[in-house]
Amino acid sequence: MQPLYPTRQCHLGKQAGNLGRALFKLPVLGNHIAARSARETKRKKEKGFSPLGALVNFLFVIRRTVRFWRMRAYNAVGYAILADRYPQIACPGPMDGPYFSRAPQTGWLTPFLTTLETRAFAMMDAFPPDLVIRLNVDPETAFARKPDHDPVKLAAKIRDVPRLRFRNAPIIDLDTRAPLKEVVAAASQAALGVMKVYGKVPQEKSLPTPRGAVIALVGCDGSGKSSLSRELVAEIGQSRPTRYGYLGLGSGDLGRRIGRLPFIGPVLEHKLGKRAKTTRTRGEKIPDLPTALVVFAFSLLRYRRFRQIQRAAARGEMVITDRYPQMEIPAQCDGPGLSAATSDNPLIQRLAAVERRLYQRMAARRPDLVVHLDIDPETAQRRKPDHDLEALRIKTSVMSRLRYNEAPRVVIDSRAPYKEVKRQVSEALRQHALTGPL
Image (cartoon, rainbow, N blue to C red; front, side, top):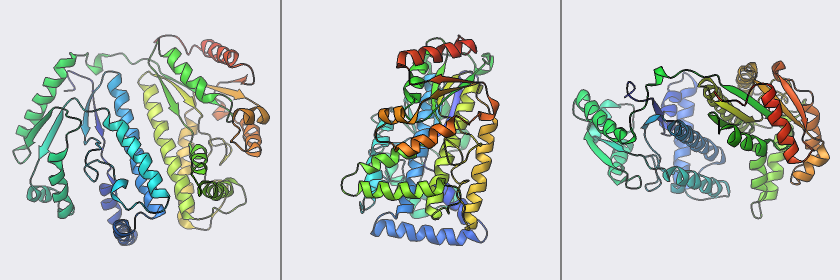
């Protein structure tokens, strides 16, 4: 396909099984992880997810969703997509369907995450593929090819495959017990037949590589980063490929949404906020391993989004980011979350070291322009009344000291009327030759 069409391969599976099998093979820790996984699986069937198990499984939901929308972005700019697996909502379970709805809905966390997962899968399910190539196999052949897999689970998956309809998308069934060359030839013929409907496009290698750029909008909450970045994407996108990139953690917004839950919400928000504040404070101790794992997971998600943004810029796209990671001040304003407080736990120390390396890599890639939307804490709180004033004061103080590895930087008073702020930002981009066509 590649000689005729720019093509991308995207894996849209959960891949929890592959990760588990890799972890089980680790020396010393492998047996412990396998035993813990078995206990969690048994608990899930009988009592529902543990809090840690629920959070870990939801990270896989987030990962799949991010991959899906990245796939959609590639498709929107003209790529043909070859997807390994495809999310669906009709058949919950291991065949790329929702997972939480199959577990007992105990406590408050599992129902909450079930709702979020259902929404994510509904959004993905709304975009059916143009063609489904269903690769059929019998359980014996599948197990012979994957001897490290559970034969019972393989058989269950094979039983579910015929039930999948992907919103009545065209489906071609192939018998994968046939020789590989025959299966590949049949699949290629079917895929090329569908792609001809959309017309031939130039070969990817023949396209010139334009100059991309990354523009970082930074500032305290309430300074207008999100609104401005999205409007700039729409405006600049009329003359060149442009995309929005969120490089914050989103943990604060998640905490506030939890706080709005009936009855237990305020208590949970207070408890989680206290742990987060302790983790961000120099001289304090990181509360426990689950807290460190959650912080580390958010950092991994940020690093993943950062890499996507860098790849987009390398392809020649203009990227407007809401926030930007930095290494100058830990645990504040998009700095590493595990480097302010300390811990005697060797595993937490290891997580903190890995996180620092991730942030060093991100901070080393300077944006082409940093637009600092300056604001005072009082104005910020009037715009964001659900935010803590003291936290806003800390953020505004920290923001004034950040230099983002000496990247080009402009400071704009975001207390001015919105139209004036937008005009000044647009003018700064023009002065740095960052708004013209390719």
